[in-house]
Image (cartoon, rainbow, N blue to C red; front, side, top):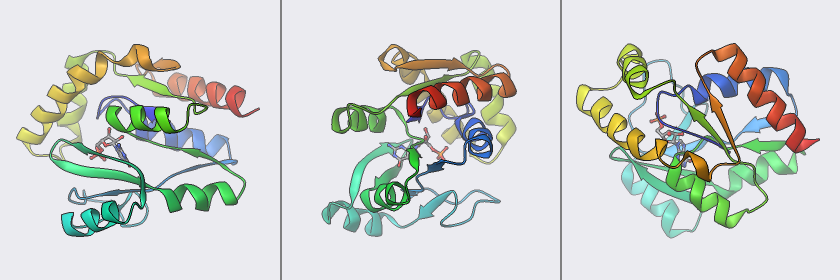
Length: 179
Ligand code: 5GP
């Protein structure tokens, strides 16, 4: 699983890895947050209402779920099964609480923390993305401070100061873990 602050570049690095390692797939999570421009339901996320999310929680459909910056996010057990049955390994892109929960449930999973060069740079990237409201960016930066303090919990840490080098590092870690 790949974790690290919002804006650290997890999604970009994962997309790079998927192009190079065909035996991998990303689990599509559920979220209650609003769709950003360019996002497609069922591709980036399964977008849903809070009521629908709560129903899935009641049905025990989630392997894990967490609240992040005012929205709910969760990984469906069925999504993992779908990928694993196809014989591929799964990448979870997940925030800190979810990573902790998955680590407890699946101690054999490999956890990788993607670190931004600095909190200042993270703030710049989040503002540049310009899809989130100012208060949401502030909240994400606040959460990031806590997440940065937890990086020693992870099996691996990658500094994302250069996307192509960081992608290469991620590919190498995944290749050696799945070899
Ligand atoms: P974003 O709103 O920027 O897409 O995601 C916010 C945070 O939620 C990111 O750190 C992302 O990795 C995390 N996230 C995405 N899907 C899940 C999930 O299924 N479970 C958990 N716990 N976190 C998730």
